Length: 387
Image (cartoon, rainbow, N blue to C red; front, side, top):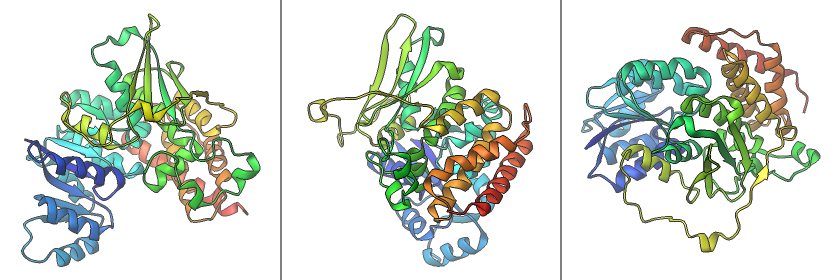
């Protein structure tokens, strides 16, 4: 029985993780849950899974959650950074699912690694911001970091049984989002509601907007570089609108191995939870006869500026990827709140990057300071924009 702690249990990945666990209670038990402010859903999850620990963002939300659960609950309700740390460091946790959205997931994930817990990593920002530090700590602690992102899970699966030195390149696929063929003028008029209608995936708000700008794929390029120890020149991106081929590995003899499946996050989640085994799942299986044609298109770096910025940030290294991520999070939120146009998101990020003085080989405090600075600078730029 594998004992699981879920960081970000009320988000899209967290909910899907609990769906997988619910269907396989003979193999997994939930020992801890964390969330931010969605205490109504957290209450339901606690009642269903009866974890020993749960943590929320602050004392006020913890007090409200305790009142909602009533005195009969056996779950210890914690809060804040100390509460999150306890949920991942507890002795009765075997694996931590890192599913908190954005930069907020970095420190709890690092805490889990420092406590010697295996990681099912859905929070790509952890490696984007601090890949070197995180993976060195994981190696030091003997911790497995298993990717949950569909693309990185696909690469991870395609590499099984093969030698790293035989890899020529990896190819990440991208749907292209809902505005793949939109003109510049059309993209300038995109509304948050339109951008949140992803053509193939059901995801959280932030990652859905990132998919529309292609920043999500840029962040995935950086994450892939750390996960698989490859330089940017060995990581390519292809547009694949059907989202059936999740990624590919090309070997030096010309062989290409692809991982395929329906666009359903429960598939890579199930693999990460059960690795090196596979769970029996009957739902949402792939029928290629119904899929029809599979298309692959070049990813134009001029049209998709976000991807170009991410490659450049990865090449520069140091604090630059953390700045890329922090500025992007601010710009995406500003768009969702209708403070800036859709086509301004990436330009805000570009401007912040141009202002940054890179620090090489940063410690965790320097990374967090770069993130804080990037958000501050992005906020200034956003305030000066007149839509």
